[in-house]
Length: 243
Image 1: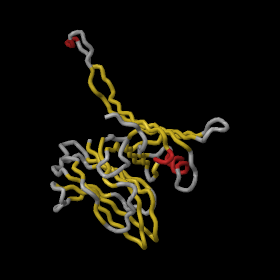
Image 2: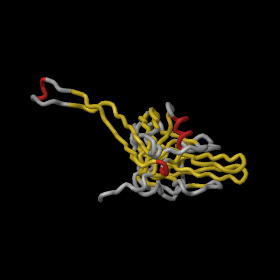
Image 3: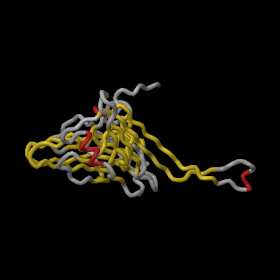
Image 4: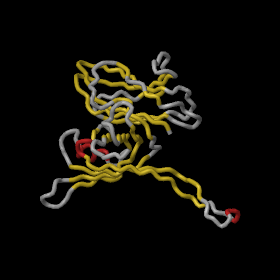
Protein backbone atom coordinates (compact mmCIF):
# COMPACT_ATOMS: atom_id res chain seq x y z
CA UNK A 1 0.00 0.00 0.00
CA UNK A 2 1.35 3.42 -0.97
CA UNK A 3 1.68 5.97 1.81
CA UNK A 4 1.50 9.76 1.63
CA UNK A 5 3.33 11.45 4.49
CA UNK A 6 0.89 13.84 6.15
CA UNK A 7 1.30 13.26 9.90
CA UNK A 8 4.84 12.15 10.74
CA UNK A 9 5.29 12.44 14.51
CA UNK A 10 8.81 13.22 15.70
CA UNK A 11 9.92 13.51 19.31
CA UNK A 12 13.37 14.67 20.43
CA UNK A 13 14.14 14.58 24.16
CA UNK A 14 11.16 16.46 25.69
CA UNK A 15 10.11 18.22 22.48
CA UNK A 16 7.32 17.35 20.03
CA UNK A 17 8.61 18.45 16.62
CA UNK A 18 5.42 17.53 14.75
CA UNK A 19 4.03 21.05 14.46
CA UNK A 20 7.33 22.63 13.42
CA UNK A 21 8.73 20.02 11.00
CA UNK A 22 7.89 19.31 7.36
CA UNK A 23 10.66 16.91 6.43
CA UNK A 24 12.16 14.02 8.40
CA UNK A 25 14.52 11.46 6.90
CA UNK A 26 15.97 8.37 8.60
CA UNK A 27 18.90 6.46 7.15
CA UNK A 28 20.39 3.13 8.22
CA UNK A 29 23.74 1.89 6.95
CA UNK A 30 26.04 -1.11 7.28
CA UNK A 31 29.69 -0.73 6.37
CA UNK A 32 30.70 -2.86 3.39
CA UNK A 33 33.97 -4.67 4.18
CA UNK A 34 35.94 -6.34 1.39
CA UNK A 35 36.64 -10.00 2.18
CA UNK A 36 37.77 -11.13 -1.29
CA UNK A 37 40.42 -13.89 -1.41
CA UNK A 38 42.07 -16.09 -4.03
CA UNK A 39 39.36 -18.59 -3.19
CA UNK A 40 36.54 -16.21 -4.14
CA UNK A 41 36.39 -17.57 -7.69
CA UNK A 42 37.06 -14.23 -9.34
CA UNK A 43 34.11 -12.55 -7.65
CA UNK A 44 34.35 -9.82 -5.05
CA UNK A 45 33.14 -10.84 -1.59
CA UNK A 46 31.97 -8.47 1.11
CA UNK A 47 30.89 -8.72 4.73
CA UNK A 48 28.83 -6.37 6.85
CA UNK A 49 30.81 -4.18 9.25
CA UNK A 50 29.63 -1.55 11.69
CA UNK A 51 26.02 -0.37 11.66
CA UNK A 52 25.01 3.28 11.87
CA UNK A 53 21.93 5.43 11.45
CA UNK A 54 21.26 9.13 11.01
CA UNK A 55 18.39 11.59 10.93
CA UNK A 56 17.95 14.84 9.05
CA UNK A 57 15.04 17.16 9.67
CA UNK A 58 13.67 20.46 8.38
CA UNK A 59 10.81 22.73 9.28
CA UNK A 60 9.60 26.17 10.30
CA UNK A 61 11.38 28.00 13.10
CA UNK A 62 9.65 28.91 16.36
CA UNK A 63 10.94 30.45 19.57
CA UNK A 64 9.38 30.68 23.03
CA UNK A 65 10.13 28.92 26.30
CA UNK A 66 10.35 25.17 25.81
CA UNK A 67 9.87 25.53 22.06
CA UNK A 68 11.84 24.44 19.04
CA UNK A 69 14.66 26.97 19.11
CA UNK A 70 15.68 26.98 22.79
CA UNK A 71 15.33 23.20 23.03
CA UNK A 72 17.26 22.50 19.80
CA UNK A 73 20.01 24.96 20.70
CA UNK A 74 20.40 23.42 24.15
CA UNK A 75 20.42 19.94 22.61
CA UNK A 76 23.25 20.71 20.16
CA UNK A 77 26.21 18.48 20.93
CA UNK A 78 24.20 16.36 23.35
CA UNK A 79 22.95 12.78 23.19
CA UNK A 80 19.21 12.44 23.63
CA UNK A 81 16.37 10.04 22.74
CA UNK A 82 14.51 10.32 19.44
CA UNK A 83 11.32 8.63 18.28
CA UNK A 84 9.91 8.92 14.75
CA UNK A 85 6.43 7.64 13.85
CA UNK A 86 5.94 7.66 10.05
CA UNK A 87 2.17 7.09 9.99
CA UNK A 88 -0.72 6.65 12.39
CA UNK A 89 -0.41 9.64 14.68
CA UNK A 90 1.53 7.89 17.49
CA UNK A 91 -1.22 5.67 18.87
CA UNK A 92 -0.26 2.62 20.92
CA UNK A 93 1.04 -0.05 18.55
CA UNK A 94 1.93 2.36 15.72
CA UNK A 95 5.28 1.66 14.06
CA UNK A 96 8.08 3.75 15.55
CA UNK A 97 11.82 4.07 14.99
CA UNK A 98 13.70 4.88 18.18
CA UNK A 99 17.26 5.48 19.26
CA UNK A 100 19.66 7.77 21.09
CA UNK A 101 21.25 10.41 18.86
CA UNK A 102 23.95 13.04 18.97
CA UNK A 103 22.52 16.34 17.68
CA UNK A 104 25.44 17.37 15.47
CA UNK A 105 23.96 20.28 13.51
CA UNK A 106 21.28 22.93 13.89
CA UNK A 107 20.82 25.63 11.25
CA UNK A 108 18.33 28.44 10.71
CA UNK A 109 17.89 31.39 8.36
CA UNK A 110 17.03 32.23 4.74
CA UNK A 111 16.62 35.16 2.37
CA UNK A 112 14.55 38.25 3.12
CA UNK A 113 10.84 37.68 2.78
CA UNK A 114 11.04 33.93 3.36
CA UNK A 115 9.45 32.08 6.28
CA UNK A 116 12.28 31.39 8.71
CA UNK A 117 13.29 27.71 8.37
CA UNK A 118 15.39 25.38 10.47
CA UNK A 119 17.30 22.21 9.69
CA UNK A 120 19.14 19.71 11.85
CA UNK A 121 21.20 16.54 11.73
CA UNK A 122 21.68 13.81 14.30
CA UNK A 123 23.60 10.53 14.37
CA UNK A 124 22.75 7.47 16.42
CA UNK A 125 24.90 6.39 19.35
CA UNK A 126 23.33 2.92 19.62
CA UNK A 127 20.96 0.67 17.67
CA UNK A 128 17.82 2.00 15.97
CA UNK A 129 15.09 -0.62 16.39
CA UNK A 130 11.89 -0.66 14.38
CA UNK A 131 9.48 -0.81 17.29
CA UNK A 132 6.11 0.53 18.40
CA UNK A 133 4.55 3.31 20.44
CA UNK A 134 3.82 2.14 23.99
CA UNK A 135 2.19 5.33 25.25
CA UNK A 136 0.55 8.03 23.11
CA UNK A 137 1.39 11.73 23.44
CA UNK A 138 -2.12 13.14 23.74
CA UNK A 139 -3.36 11.62 27.01
CA UNK A 140 -2.76 13.65 30.18
CA UNK A 141 -1.89 11.42 33.11
CA UNK A 142 -2.73 12.66 36.58
CA UNK A 143 -2.52 9.49 38.66
CA UNK A 144 -0.53 6.27 38.96
CA UNK A 145 -1.43 3.63 36.36
CA UNK A 146 -0.43 1.16 33.67
CA UNK A 147 -0.48 1.29 29.88
CA UNK A 148 -1.77 -0.98 27.14
CA UNK A 149 0.28 -4.11 26.49
CA UNK A 150 2.03 -4.64 23.15
CA UNK A 151 3.24 -8.01 21.89
CA UNK A 152 6.80 -7.24 20.80
CA UNK A 153 8.16 -10.75 21.29
CA UNK A 154 10.88 -12.41 23.33
CA UNK A 155 14.56 -11.43 23.54
CA UNK A 156 17.15 -13.93 22.33
CA UNK A 157 20.70 -14.04 23.68
CA UNK A 158 22.39 -10.75 22.85
CA UNK A 159 19.16 -8.93 21.97
CA UNK A 160 18.07 -5.90 23.94
CA UNK A 161 14.83 -4.10 24.58
CA UNK A 162 15.24 -0.40 23.82
CA UNK A 163 12.94 2.19 25.37
CA UNK A 164 12.59 5.94 24.85
CA UNK A 165 10.59 8.22 27.13
CA UNK A 166 9.69 11.76 26.08
CA UNK A 167 8.08 13.84 28.82
CA UNK A 168 6.45 16.67 26.88
CA UNK A 169 4.99 18.68 29.76
CA UNK A 170 4.58 18.66 33.52
CA UNK A 171 2.08 20.72 35.51
CA UNK A 172 1.04 21.09 39.12
CA UNK A 173 2.93 21.66 42.36
CA UNK A 174 6.07 19.51 42.75
CA UNK A 175 4.90 17.02 40.09
CA UNK A 176 6.94 13.84 39.70
CA UNK A 177 6.59 11.03 37.15
CA UNK A 178 8.36 7.67 37.48
CA UNK A 179 7.97 5.31 34.51
CA UNK A 180 8.95 1.63 34.25
CA UNK A 181 8.84 -0.98 31.49
CA UNK A 182 7.27 -4.31 32.42
CA UNK A 183 7.06 -7.67 30.65
CA UNK A 184 4.94 -10.80 31.00
CA UNK A 185 4.09 -13.99 29.13
CA UNK A 186 0.43 -12.99 28.88
CA UNK A 187 -1.51 -9.88 27.91
CA UNK A 188 -3.15 -9.98 31.35
CA UNK A 189 0.18 -9.13 33.04
CA UNK A 190 -0.73 -11.31 36.00
CA UNK A 191 2.95 -11.77 36.93
CA UNK A 192 4.54 -8.65 35.45
CA UNK A 193 8.30 -8.19 35.82
CA UNK A 194 9.94 -4.76 35.79
CA UNK A 195 12.72 -4.71 33.20
CA UNK A 196 13.68 -1.01 33.01
CA UNK A 197 13.05 2.00 35.26
CA UNK A 198 13.50 5.59 34.14
CA UNK A 199 14.66 8.32 36.50
CA UNK A 200 11.83 10.38 37.96
CA UNK A 201 10.89 13.34 35.74
CA UNK A 202 9.67 16.67 37.09
CA UNK A 203 9.72 18.70 33.85
CA UNK A 204 9.85 18.26 30.10
CA UNK A 205 12.78 15.95 29.34
CA UNK A 206 13.83 12.75 27.58
CA UNK A 207 15.48 9.48 28.58
CA UNK A 208 16.53 6.28 26.84
CA UNK A 209 17.26 2.88 28.37
CA UNK A 210 18.01 -0.65 27.19
CA UNK A 211 18.30 -4.08 28.76
CA UNK A 212 21.65 -5.83 29.19
CA UNK A 213 21.38 -8.49 26.48
CA UNK A 214 20.15 -11.27 28.75
CA UNK A 215 17.44 -13.46 27.12
CA UNK A 216 13.85 -12.75 28.17
CA UNK A 217 11.14 -15.23 27.27
CA UNK A 218 8.22 -12.87 27.94
CA UNK A 219 6.55 -11.60 24.78
CA UNK A 220 4.21 -8.89 26.13
CA UNK A 221 5.43 -5.44 27.20
CA UNK A 222 3.84 -2.36 28.75
CA UNK A 223 4.55 0.77 30.74
CA UNK A 224 3.64 1.46 34.33
CA UNK A 225 3.96 4.83 36.01
CA UNK A 226 3.76 6.46 39.42
CA UNK A 227 2.70 10.11 39.71
CA UNK A 228 3.00 12.28 42.83
CA UNK A 229 2.55 15.94 43.68
CA UNK A 230 -0.31 18.38 44.11
CA UNK A 231 -2.70 18.36 41.11
CA UNK A 232 0.01 16.87 38.88
CA UNK A 233 -0.49 16.35 35.15
CA UNK A 234 1.92 14.93 32.59
CA UNK A 235 1.93 14.51 28.83
CA UNK A 236 4.44 11.91 27.69
CA UNK A 237 5.11 9.52 24.84
CA UNK A 238 7.11 6.29 24.97
CA UNK A 239 8.42 3.85 22.39
CA UNK A 240 9.75 0.29 22.66
CA UNK A 241 11.76 -1.83 20.24
CA UNK A 242 13.97 -4.93 20.09
CA UNK A 243 17.35 -5.13 18.37
